[in-house]
Length: 321
Image (cartoon, rainbow, N blue to C red):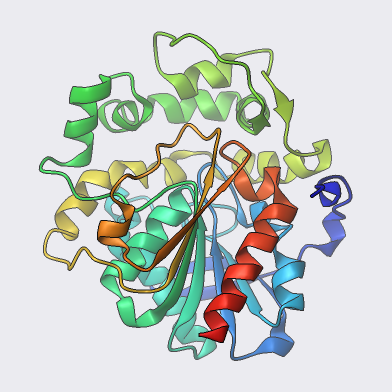
Protein backbone atom coordinates (compact mmCIF):
# COMPACT_ATOMS: atom_id res chain seq x y z
CA UNK A 1 0.00 0.00 0.00
CA UNK A 2 1.47 3.35 -0.99
CA UNK A 3 1.49 6.63 0.85
CA UNK A 4 1.24 8.88 -2.19
CA UNK A 5 -1.13 11.19 -0.33
CA UNK A 6 1.84 12.13 1.82
CA UNK A 7 3.19 14.34 -0.94
CA UNK A 8 0.06 15.91 -2.43
CA UNK A 9 -1.73 17.53 0.51
CA UNK A 10 -2.96 21.00 -0.39
CA UNK A 11 -2.93 23.34 2.60
CA UNK A 12 -6.03 25.12 1.33
CA UNK A 13 -7.97 21.85 1.76
CA UNK A 14 -7.66 22.03 5.56
CA UNK A 15 -10.86 23.27 7.21
CA UNK A 16 -11.08 26.87 8.42
CA UNK A 17 -11.20 27.23 12.21
CA UNK A 18 -13.89 28.53 14.53
CA UNK A 19 -13.32 29.72 18.10
CA UNK A 20 -15.76 27.96 20.41
CA UNK A 21 -16.26 28.80 24.10
CA UNK A 22 -16.13 25.66 26.21
CA UNK A 23 -15.43 24.94 29.88
CA UNK A 24 -14.18 28.46 30.63
CA UNK A 25 -11.77 28.66 27.66
CA UNK A 26 -11.91 29.14 23.91
CA UNK A 27 -10.89 26.27 21.64
CA UNK A 28 -9.84 26.70 18.03
CA UNK A 29 -11.89 24.00 16.33
CA UNK A 30 -11.61 22.72 12.77
CA UNK A 31 -14.68 20.96 11.44
CA UNK A 32 -15.56 18.95 8.34
CA UNK A 33 -18.46 16.79 7.21
CA UNK A 34 -21.18 18.97 8.71
CA UNK A 35 -23.56 17.21 6.33
CA UNK A 36 -22.97 14.06 8.41
CA UNK A 37 -24.54 15.54 11.52
CA UNK A 38 -25.35 12.85 14.06
CA UNK A 39 -22.23 10.76 13.55
CA UNK A 40 -19.44 12.65 15.37
CA UNK A 41 -15.80 11.68 15.57
CA UNK A 42 -13.36 13.85 17.52
CA UNK A 43 -9.62 13.83 16.72
CA UNK A 44 -7.21 14.72 19.53
CA UNK A 45 -3.62 15.69 18.71
CA UNK A 46 -0.47 15.00 20.71
CA UNK A 47 2.68 16.94 21.71
CA UNK A 48 4.19 18.97 20.17
CA UNK A 49 1.50 18.98 17.54
CA UNK A 50 -1.62 20.68 16.25
CA UNK A 51 -5.01 19.77 14.79
CA UNK A 52 -3.23 19.88 11.42
CA UNK A 53 -1.57 16.54 12.27
CA UNK A 54 -4.91 14.89 11.31
CA UNK A 55 -4.98 16.44 7.81
CA UNK A 56 -4.79 13.07 6.04
CA UNK A 57 -7.58 11.47 8.06
CA UNK A 58 -10.22 14.18 7.68
CA UNK A 59 -11.30 13.63 4.03
CA UNK A 60 -11.42 9.86 4.50
CA UNK A 61 -13.58 10.09 7.62
CA UNK A 62 -15.92 12.60 5.99
CA UNK A 63 -16.31 10.32 2.97
CA UNK A 64 -17.15 7.48 5.37
CA UNK A 65 -20.05 9.51 6.75
CA UNK A 66 -18.57 11.15 9.86
CA UNK A 67 -18.94 14.64 11.26
CA UNK A 68 -15.26 15.29 11.97
CA UNK A 69 -14.33 17.65 14.82
CA UNK A 70 -10.66 18.52 15.35
CA UNK A 71 -9.84 20.88 18.24
CA UNK A 72 -6.57 22.52 19.01
CA UNK A 73 -6.66 21.64 22.69
CA UNK A 74 -5.92 24.20 25.39
CA UNK A 75 -2.35 25.46 25.19
CA UNK A 76 -2.16 24.97 21.41
CA UNK A 77 -2.68 27.10 18.31
CA UNK A 78 -5.22 29.88 18.80
CA UNK A 79 -6.92 28.10 21.68
CA UNK A 80 -6.70 29.60 25.16
CA UNK A 81 -3.45 29.19 27.09
CA UNK A 82 -4.32 29.55 30.79
CA UNK A 83 -1.48 30.70 33.04
CA UNK A 84 -2.20 28.35 35.95
CA UNK A 85 -0.45 24.99 35.57
CA UNK A 86 -3.31 23.11 37.24
CA UNK A 87 -5.69 24.25 34.49
CA UNK A 88 -4.08 21.65 32.23
CA UNK A 89 -4.96 18.62 34.36
CA UNK A 90 -7.04 15.71 33.06
CA UNK A 91 -10.26 17.10 34.54
CA UNK A 92 -9.85 20.31 32.55
CA UNK A 93 -8.66 18.62 29.34
CA UNK A 94 -11.44 16.03 29.37
CA UNK A 95 -13.93 18.69 30.48
CA UNK A 96 -13.09 20.68 27.35
CA UNK A 97 -14.03 17.71 25.18
CA UNK A 98 -17.26 17.04 27.08
CA UNK A 99 -18.18 20.70 26.72
CA UNK A 100 -17.37 20.51 23.01
CA UNK A 101 -19.86 17.64 22.66
CA UNK A 102 -22.43 19.75 24.52
CA UNK A 103 -21.81 22.62 22.11
CA UNK A 104 -22.72 20.39 19.17
CA UNK A 105 -25.60 18.72 21.00
CA UNK A 106 -24.01 15.27 21.06
CA UNK A 107 -24.51 12.80 23.91
CA UNK A 108 -21.42 10.84 22.91
CA UNK A 109 -18.87 10.42 20.14
CA UNK A 110 -16.03 8.28 18.88
CA UNK A 111 -12.68 9.72 19.95
CA UNK A 112 -9.32 9.25 18.25
CA UNK A 113 -6.12 10.28 20.02
CA UNK A 114 -2.44 10.24 19.21
CA UNK A 115 0.40 10.54 21.75
CA UNK A 116 -0.76 12.96 24.49
CA UNK A 117 -4.11 13.10 22.73
CA UNK A 118 -4.39 9.36 23.41
CA UNK A 119 -3.63 9.99 27.09
CA UNK A 120 -6.47 12.51 27.18
CA UNK A 121 -8.86 10.14 25.41
CA UNK A 122 -8.05 7.35 27.87
CA UNK A 123 -8.62 9.78 30.76
CA UNK A 124 -11.81 11.17 29.23
CA UNK A 125 -13.18 7.64 28.89
CA UNK A 126 -12.41 6.90 32.55
CA UNK A 127 -13.93 10.13 33.85
CA UNK A 128 -16.87 10.45 31.45
CA UNK A 129 -17.59 6.93 30.13
CA UNK A 130 -21.10 7.85 28.97
CA UNK A 131 -19.73 10.46 26.55
CA UNK A 132 -17.44 8.04 24.67
CA UNK A 133 -18.88 5.30 22.46
CA UNK A 134 -15.64 4.05 20.86
CA UNK A 135 -11.93 4.67 21.40
CA UNK A 136 -9.19 4.67 18.79
CA UNK A 137 -5.73 5.52 20.07
CA UNK A 138 -2.38 5.74 18.33
CA UNK A 139 1.08 5.24 19.84
CA UNK A 140 0.28 5.59 23.55
CA UNK A 141 -1.50 2.61 25.12
CA UNK A 142 -3.54 2.77 28.30
CA UNK A 143 -1.21 3.57 31.19
CA UNK A 144 -2.00 1.44 34.21
CA UNK A 145 -1.86 3.24 37.54
CA UNK A 146 1.32 2.57 39.49
CA UNK A 147 1.88 2.63 43.23
CA UNK A 148 3.80 5.91 43.07
CA UNK A 149 2.94 9.15 41.27
CA UNK A 150 4.27 9.24 37.71
CA UNK A 151 7.10 11.73 38.04
CA UNK A 152 8.45 10.14 41.21
CA UNK A 153 8.33 6.74 39.49
CA UNK A 154 10.01 8.03 36.31
CA UNK A 155 12.72 9.85 38.25
CA UNK A 156 13.65 6.65 40.05
CA UNK A 157 13.78 4.66 36.80
CA UNK A 158 15.11 7.15 34.26
CA UNK A 159 16.77 9.90 36.31
CA UNK A 160 16.36 13.65 36.53
CA UNK A 161 17.26 14.38 32.91
CA UNK A 162 14.40 12.30 31.51
CA UNK A 163 12.29 14.93 29.80
CA UNK A 164 9.06 14.16 31.70
CA UNK A 165 10.98 14.65 34.96
CA UNK A 166 12.98 17.66 33.71
CA UNK A 167 9.79 19.47 32.63
CA UNK A 168 8.52 19.11 36.21
CA UNK A 169 11.66 19.59 38.28
CA UNK A 170 13.08 22.50 36.25
CA UNK A 171 10.01 24.44 35.08
CA UNK A 172 10.69 27.03 32.42
CA UNK A 173 14.15 25.81 31.43
CA UNK A 174 13.20 23.59 28.51
CA UNK A 175 10.33 25.91 27.55
CA UNK A 176 12.75 28.76 26.89
CA UNK A 177 15.23 26.64 24.92
CA UNK A 178 12.51 25.17 22.70
CA UNK A 179 11.12 28.65 22.09
CA UNK A 180 14.56 29.94 21.10
CA UNK A 181 14.91 27.10 18.60
CA UNK A 182 11.30 26.44 17.55
CA UNK A 183 11.88 25.75 13.86
CA UNK A 184 15.00 23.66 14.45
CA UNK A 185 13.37 21.69 17.26
CA UNK A 186 10.27 20.79 15.25
CA UNK A 187 12.28 20.02 12.12
CA UNK A 188 14.40 17.61 14.18
CA UNK A 189 11.35 16.18 15.93
CA UNK A 190 9.18 15.23 12.97
CA UNK A 191 11.41 12.54 11.48
CA UNK A 192 11.23 8.89 10.47
CA UNK A 193 13.73 6.11 9.80
CA UNK A 194 16.22 7.60 12.21
CA UNK A 195 19.43 5.62 12.71
CA UNK A 196 20.07 4.03 16.10
CA UNK A 197 22.00 6.28 18.45
CA UNK A 198 23.72 5.78 21.76
CA UNK A 199 22.07 7.27 24.85
CA UNK A 200 23.13 10.87 25.33
CA UNK A 201 23.67 12.81 28.53
CA UNK A 202 21.40 15.74 29.34
CA UNK A 203 17.78 16.22 28.42
CA UNK A 204 16.67 14.71 25.11
CA UNK A 205 14.28 17.49 24.04
CA UNK A 206 16.88 20.19 24.76
CA UNK A 207 19.47 18.20 22.78
CA UNK A 208 16.98 17.93 19.93
CA UNK A 209 16.31 21.67 19.96
CA UNK A 210 20.03 22.42 19.78
CA UNK A 211 20.97 19.80 17.16
CA UNK A 212 21.90 21.54 13.92
CA UNK A 213 21.54 18.46 11.70
CA UNK A 214 18.32 16.41 11.67
CA UNK A 215 18.54 12.62 11.53
CA UNK A 216 16.54 10.28 9.33
CA UNK A 217 13.93 11.57 6.90
CA UNK A 218 11.37 14.34 7.16
CA UNK A 219 7.76 13.18 7.53
CA UNK A 220 6.29 16.32 5.97
CA UNK A 221 6.91 19.05 3.41
CA UNK A 222 8.32 22.47 4.26
CA UNK A 223 4.90 24.08 3.82
CA UNK A 224 3.36 21.56 6.23
CA UNK A 225 6.15 22.07 8.75
CA UNK A 226 5.54 25.82 8.58
CA UNK A 227 2.02 25.28 9.98
CA UNK A 228 3.44 23.75 13.16
CA UNK A 229 6.34 26.20 13.42
CA UNK A 230 4.15 29.29 13.08
CA UNK A 231 1.72 27.93 15.69
CA UNK A 232 4.43 27.33 18.29
CA UNK A 233 6.22 30.59 17.48
CA UNK A 234 2.93 32.25 18.41
CA UNK A 235 2.11 30.29 21.57
CA UNK A 236 5.48 29.19 22.85
CA UNK A 237 5.69 25.77 24.52
CA UNK A 238 4.74 26.39 28.16
CA UNK A 239 1.01 25.73 27.78
CA UNK A 240 1.54 22.41 26.04
CA UNK A 241 4.33 21.35 28.40
CA UNK A 242 2.02 22.10 31.32
CA UNK A 243 0.17 18.92 30.35
CA UNK A 244 3.28 17.04 31.55
CA UNK A 245 3.33 19.10 34.74
CA UNK A 246 -0.02 17.60 35.73
CA UNK A 247 0.93 13.94 35.53
CA UNK A 248 1.19 13.57 39.31
CA UNK A 249 -1.97 15.62 39.81
CA UNK A 250 -3.75 13.34 37.33
CA UNK A 251 -2.48 10.31 39.25
CA UNK A 252 -4.32 11.63 42.32
CA UNK A 253 -7.42 12.74 40.40
CA UNK A 254 -7.88 9.26 38.92
CA UNK A 255 -7.25 7.41 42.19
CA UNK A 256 -10.85 6.37 42.80
CA UNK A 257 -11.98 5.93 39.19
CA UNK A 258 -12.88 2.47 37.88
CA UNK A 259 -9.70 1.68 35.88
CA UNK A 260 -11.33 -0.65 33.34
CA UNK A 261 -12.48 0.77 30.00
CA UNK A 262 -15.33 -1.26 28.54
CA UNK A 263 -15.84 0.62 25.27
CA UNK A 264 -14.78 -1.03 22.01
CA UNK A 265 -11.24 0.16 21.36
CA UNK A 266 -8.63 0.07 18.63
CA UNK A 267 -4.97 0.48 19.55
CA UNK A 268 -2.57 1.30 16.70
CA UNK A 269 1.15 0.96 17.40
CA UNK A 270 4.11 1.97 15.29
CA UNK A 271 6.57 -0.92 15.24
CA UNK A 272 9.51 1.52 15.42
CA UNK A 273 7.96 3.90 17.90
CA UNK A 274 10.02 4.53 21.03
CA UNK A 275 6.82 4.52 23.09
CA UNK A 276 6.53 1.13 24.78
CA UNK A 277 3.65 -1.21 24.03
CA UNK A 278 1.50 -2.40 26.90
CA UNK A 279 1.67 -6.04 27.97
CA UNK A 280 -1.46 -5.64 30.10
CA UNK A 281 -3.64 -3.67 27.71
CA UNK A 282 -6.43 -6.26 27.62
CA UNK A 283 -6.57 -6.34 31.42
CA UNK A 284 -7.70 -2.72 31.42
CA UNK A 285 -9.27 -2.45 27.95
CA UNK A 286 -10.82 -5.90 27.46
CA UNK A 287 -12.58 -5.03 24.20
CA UNK A 288 -9.49 -3.79 22.39
CA UNK A 289 -8.14 -4.81 19.01
CA UNK A 290 -4.43 -4.17 18.42
CA UNK A 291 -2.86 -3.31 15.06
CA UNK A 292 0.85 -2.74 14.39
CA UNK A 293 2.03 -0.59 11.49
CA UNK A 294 5.56 -0.45 10.12
CA UNK A 295 6.44 3.08 11.17
CA UNK A 296 7.73 5.25 13.99
CA UNK A 297 5.96 7.61 16.36
CA UNK A 298 4.11 9.95 13.97
CA UNK A 299 1.82 7.16 12.82
CA UNK A 300 -1.01 8.97 11.04
CA UNK A 301 1.43 11.28 9.26
CA UNK A 302 4.04 8.64 8.40
CA UNK A 303 1.54 6.05 7.18
CA UNK A 304 -1.64 7.97 6.38
CA UNK A 305 -3.15 5.47 3.96
CA UNK A 306 -2.52 2.46 6.20
CA UNK A 307 -3.80 4.40 9.21
CA UNK A 308 -6.96 5.42 7.39
CA UNK A 309 -7.69 1.92 6.16
CA UNK A 310 -7.07 0.42 9.60
CA UNK A 311 -9.44 2.91 11.22
CA UNK A 312 -12.16 2.53 8.58
CA UNK A 313 -12.04 -1.27 8.62
CA UNK A 314 -12.39 -1.33 12.39
CA UNK A 315 -15.21 1.24 12.42
CA UNK A 316 -17.08 -0.75 9.78
CA UNK A 317 -16.69 -3.90 11.86
CA UNK A 318 -18.07 -2.10 14.91
CA UNK A 319 -21.03 -0.75 12.95
CA UNK A 320 -21.83 -4.28 11.81
CA UNK A 321 -22.05 -5.62 15.35
